[in-house]
Image (cartoon, rainbow, N blue to C red):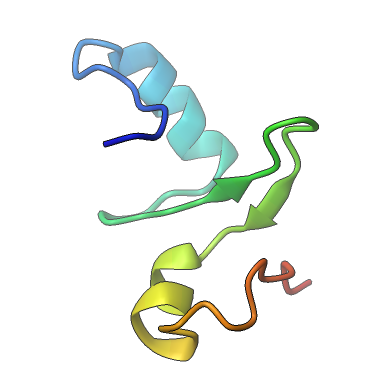
Length: 64
């Protein structure tokens, strides 16, 4: 994977991130702005897998 990820042993950090981003299941893909850390999209899996499979509307704006 070319993106940043946690190692399996980083259980405490993973739990903090699960709580912060309200992760309820796997797979979950949350897109963040690399400079600001702001959330771009909380539900990128559904955007990629169903709503915008070609990425024509990327970057997706977060729905309120």
